[in-house]
Structures are given as structure tokens and as C-alpha cells.
Image (cartoon, rainbow, N blue to C red; front, side, top):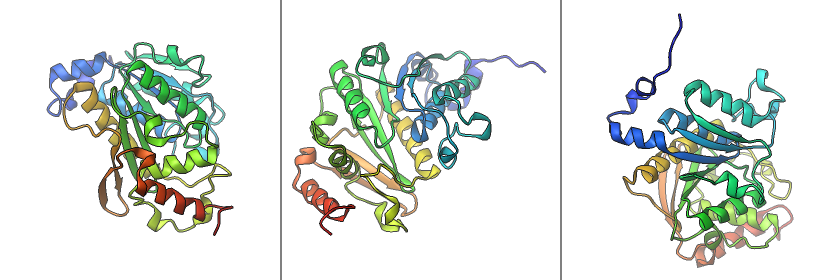
Length: 289
């Protein structure tokens, strides 16, 4: 039996939570996502099912068996294949009318203007340790007045923060500058999740090593990230609902059954942030204790 695609039929069950006019607005929007791995891939598929009509997606990597625990595009049939191609095919299988542009070399300083051309919103899907790429993409969002959403998978939960035009920027909040990657990692982790809800149930702390750029992950964290980020995207794109912007954010942890709103005026300059980062430095491998 042959089936034909209908946008209205495919996304009809969104109606009620959004109006038909709002669904049409979502169809007209273009979202950029850098990274098609753990969070980026599920971001794309979630937003495609929301009915977003166009995407710019970037990733230079291929799928490996170590990706199986958390990356929606990682299967036996996709091993060794480019992530950006696999996820593009999955998204087009949901909505064959998508206007989708791939950036198979990832994001670089030279491509940022092209990557963000005509984009209404950026959703961060980069690997935690992609410090240079993340710093460049968020700086570009600030330059081009593009709202940006980041949702970090922490344990079995997510920490969410929005950076909106005319408000505190990523750099102002985290203060990365020219710091070493290890310090950037600490500031990113502590800045995103000042409440630290995920730390209490980590059963093997040795699996986290910022210096060696490795850490554990869960599919629950990635999927919670996508649900939260897509909801922030909906609110931003439709200009409806409360949107917390940096220095405000929130962390939800499903294991702990807790939701905490966070507020760090001044970002990395806040006294509590300085204290938490000092404690984190002492506890890390190679620290004082």
C-alpha cells in the first residue's frame, strides 16, 4: 500500500497544545543544531516531530559501537557511517518536506556565518568537551542576535540554560576567554548545574575525568534534554510562555525526583560559583586532594 505525506495530518496531534496558526509558524522556522551525537541527534528528531520545517545540522564524526548507550542514530546498520547523514535520513523519514542542510565538516570559524544564515534558533548538541566549537558557536549567536538553547545531560537528568539576544551572553556567564580546556570544563559543568543534583548518585566517580575528556552518560539524560530543549524552542519561536535566560536556568533530575531553578547573577563572578569551582578543582584528578 502506497502512502503519501501530509504535513497537516502528520502533525495534527500537536494541535491543542499549539494552534493551527502556531503550527504554521513552527513549519516556517529554521533551527541550527551543531552535533548529531547523544543530545544533538535526539534534538533533531524531537524538533522534526514538533513540525519545525528547516534545519542546519553539523557533525564531522561517524558512529561507533561506544555510542550505542545514548545516541539515537547508533545501530549495527549505521556503524562507521557519518552521523550527519544518518540523522538527516531519519529526520527526512519523519518529514520528507524538510528543508535540511548538512555541514559534514562540523562547525568552524570559517563556516559559522553560513551555518547561521537564515536561522531562527540555535540548539547546542555539541559534545561536552568540544570547547572551541562551543565557544565559537555561542559567540556567533551573540553577534547575529540568534537565541540559543543548551541542555546538558547530567546523570539521569538535564540542566537547561537559554542565551537570548540583548541579555547575558555565554561568554559573560561562563567567562571562558583563553582559559585551558580543563578550566573551561569545570566552569561549564558548575555553571550549568549549580544545584549539582546529579552528583549524589554517581556510583563510580573515577569514570569522570575532565583531563582525559571522558565521563559516563545515559539515554535518559539525553532524552530529557531533548524534551526540555524542544519545549524551550517552542516558547522562544512562538513567543509564548516563560523563558528563563542566563543567568537563570534550571536542572531537573529524574532519579532524584527534583527540579531546581538556579540563579547566578554575574555568572562565573558570583561568589557561590567561585566557591563551587574551588571545591571542584580540589576534587578533580591531579587536584589538591
